[in-house]
Length: 219
Image 1 (cartoon, rainbow, N blue to C red):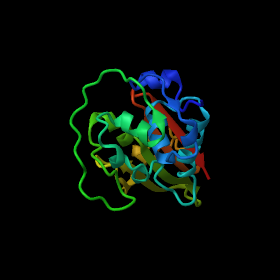
Image 2: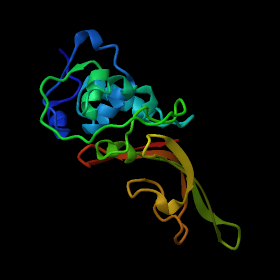
Image 3: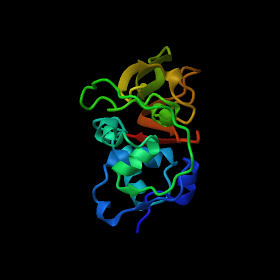
Image 4: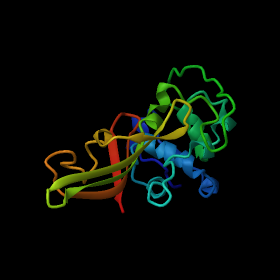
């Protein structure tokens, strides 16, 4: 049997090792796999490598898509499982076996959501905080000296995409100062006027334990 998550990643989210059923190997939803693998810190496995590749492909221009499309993981189908991670394992074809005892809060249904916009259950609790940790920055920055008077010309067009408490992904206009420290290429923007030209999409996140990760795609 192939394993979707490494033992270390599963322990990180409070579960014992989980085996993937052979019959379900081709049937799991990629966004359910993204949820599980992101929560576990992208453990080394073929399914998680595929999930991460899709996560990054979606923010690779053009167009820039939400890296996690939670509406494609129909979690309402397994509401009888009280633990959110156990729900995802059910949906992706896992046989979870005995789990570490937990005390989850009672689950409530989310009101009707627009298709493709949010989760079909309540994901506002702390168990799903890793979803809200995902930030996407679509940034175009230019800076340099122009003209005989050595005027410094600066331009910045930045969109920030994030997830709200319902799992909906939203874009807004952002400023250069909001770019994360891990973003590369904006060093010195707004200062003496070093030459800068960068166009990139940047995504960062935290896993279930709060471990930080990021990826930048320049174009």
